[in-house]
Image (cartoon, rainbow over all chains, first blue to last red; front, side, top):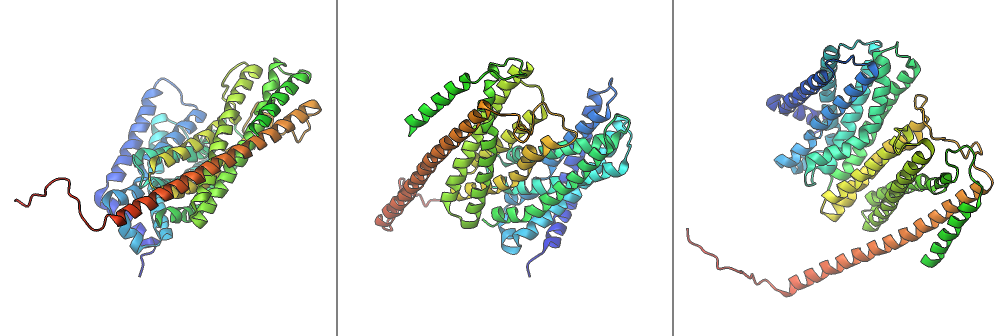
Length: 223
Length: 239
């Protein structure tokens, strides 16, 4: 019997908990980026608009550092062919994308706590903040898993994964900034409806990335 | 054909100087750059979407001719993206007094340019023809969602305040001689695009045939060599 997406997800979680390299790298990246932001703005009051932009950029780069690894590692360790023989491409995508979703949700939680603490930014609408974080994590998981598969057999693959993923995720960053600046401050004169539209847009973008992903991933993975 | 097209370009260029200066511009005589700017994003958007459609056809059929069509369309789309940026930057300097003024529409088109720069980067990083065609095809399809968002949704969001008019045609702001010139240039650019596209595809198909022929020759010479193993250096069995 072929393993389903649950088996792939379990495999990814087990290997991550055994090695913990991805977790440690991403955690360190989150701490470093927040400390760097805190150092760069030590004599400034970070406005909610600026805070939204900085947090979005930190999340984008944390995702690019952490997420393609889950696909690239199969080619580096030579286990990709075995996976191709034993599992359907759609299951591989779902297993890896869901693992990336779990990983990214954890990363965004850690990053948010650190960021809000270090920059002393308060939350105005926590529910909108959570929606923005979840929508971004879903879109990052879907898009970057696909980008990882696209560059898996290319030369200089790690750098190329970032080059491919950043332009695809830039529109998402705009929506994240629009939503987060409302979630961080209501006194700045930002329209709540615009924030809600951006939050809903992020969720839709995430859902569309995950829905289209398996079809596009299958075309690359089967070769 | 090329002489006819050159003549048409020259004719329309002269025509652009025959209409009266535009009203409401900082430098009305220089606002004519708009004529050349206007058709570029329209053609770029259409070409990039057609390129994604050809990529999808390749993924369905595995026929390399669809990949040649896709790359021909993407290359032309990219040229029009660059022309959009160049003419837009010139327009920005003429009208608003600065080459780059962080207008959301200008920035969103720059993002489109980056999306497709990554497409060509991906093609360059893969050596196998079919893998290159497949992966770049998948990327072209995946890029369609953010590109559509950047071109059609982003500039119309309520929180986006742009200097760019987004409904000049719908509101009938372009009329008279201006409308005729804009339409004539759009038609001319379309004809030039089709002409260049056909040439690029023909060159791509010929290249493909040449590669097939080379493979055939290599295989043929491989057969005629028989099973003899030619060793350039003596093989040592010691140790």
